[in-house]
Image 1 (cartoon, rainbow, N blue to C red):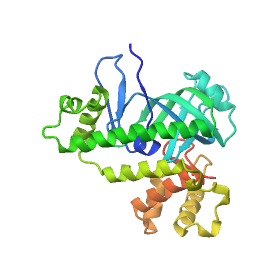
Image 2: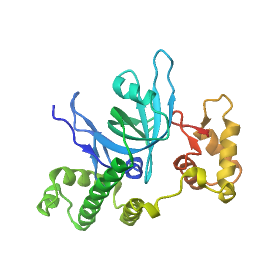
Image 3: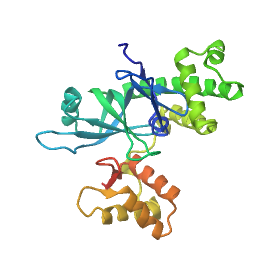
Image 4: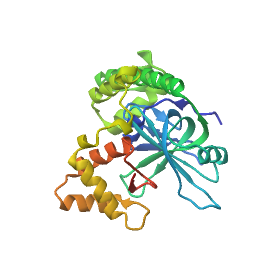
Length: 283
């Protein structure tokens, strides 16, 4: 069996994905296809591990970590069947730069709902130079696929052979054809802005200030409301259930989109975290 290519993809594009498929056969790999056509079985990510928890037991630990890149957050899960990665994660003290090679992990509690994480195979401590080089590689990959998708939108009919004839690799062409078939026309300007922001992140003067330097008086009322509600609903110490949080905030007049945006902001800023998928805890 051939070893799958390890994609360099930003967290935001990965988390936007809701399409998984397998090419058939018991031993055939499964893939997550992003809106920009990255067909991912394995990926390589570098960022800052912001928190690590053992959500298993002392006898059978399951290490859950959050790794932040310039666009968002990946969730890592390593347990009994990833002994080396689990051992490394157990010894890391956040915040720490880390490089992770791993496979896609998909959890779908119900039809139409997809939670993505990474099942790490290798975890190693990194530094800001490695993170910056990885960010640049991600920008190159993103730019290549943005150009290819823009050309794909102009084709009628869209075919893999047509994209290859324009100079794109079969791997990228195949992923884009599948992505367009599933997602339709996506907002490329949104991802172009993400590309610009990621490139700016490489400039020292453009990087955001560390969270501890943030003026608490500037935090929005909605941030504070959601944080308070998470704490209130975390009655058993295992985290507030997402559906319960959604229902409670709805009664207070908070729209679902506003809640999701605020929760994502709190997660990105390290003010809340997901001990398990579907649960939220404040920090």
